[in-house]
Image (tube, rainbow, N blue to C red; front, side, top):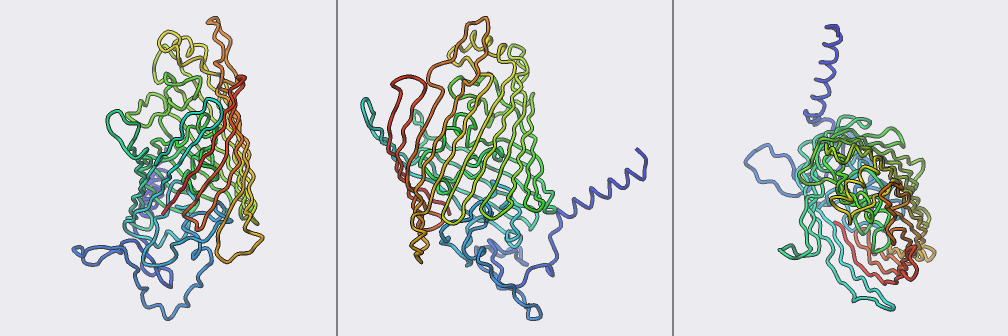
Length: 465
């Protein structure tokens, strides 16, 4: 490579680095009231607190008009939110932390004014009550409590994390869990090119990306987001994200899966590496979102890796995951849909190895698929109430099969019964404000096995702040 080209590349890299590290000049601050989380202090010894900082003297410049979006909606994408009741927290000295699990938050221009630390969170409590012949007892559970912790070092360098507590208690012999769900750094350069590194969500499916229980209908997540896309699916990642017009993208390098933990009944779910990760095989994941008009979002995500992790008994085990999703929410009408597909290679060799060491796990299928379609309507909308309440009546049909295509081998392996699942859900979601959802629904489940049908009433309350 010639010296002029090397000097040019070096200059370009230095310019990008300075763009990320150097905070913007004060003169670029927007006029009007500025809300910050913990303002920068001229005196390093001064204590910081969550306050509203009065704007500098900007008499020469007219104040920008406050937008309806700024006042009524937390910092999230209007394309994702669309029809929603007003938020409880508006512009004031207390500001809910904008969540960073999807790129449209990081790219929201309103985040440019935020500095310092903040805390937020979400959670849910549920009751599952099966009924009918042979039904077990109802189960009440504080299913999850999550706390956000974030810090905006500058306008261009931001940290975000989620700490998750499951099932209220974690001790020896209990099923509770404490886990880091996200811990990532964003380096903002320009709208179309930014950097992200740390523990983040794999950019697949609506529920995996927007997994706060108050943001989706139904107490339970769709089976396609449990058995096909193993939400909440988190991984260590490093890569790029950005937006050009209505198009948003993410692309990351991440550790691969572990094929030795694949199972016939839950697919790749137990093969996700989120602790003490083996990194002989790396993966590539990405997503493209297209929002041509308000309330409509089309998403396509993928994950591609080898999952053998250097075990010569397993082979390479190439894995490809593709998920297509759509969301539309306008005029009180809501529509959600998703189709997910997984292809696993070298399954003959993998199943042979599992039949010797872990026969109860197989046979692992060559193809897995699942999806759902959901339709809802805000039944309060025709009454044009001034309360902002929302009551969504919805119906959802879903189907998933973790053994769609089982390879026929000399081992005489056959599919396990009960892995072709169908679910009908009918329910209501009441939102008095954006941050709260009260849910009630009925579910009818069955598989391809005769007499496998079950019925269940679910109730829950979810929040975020």
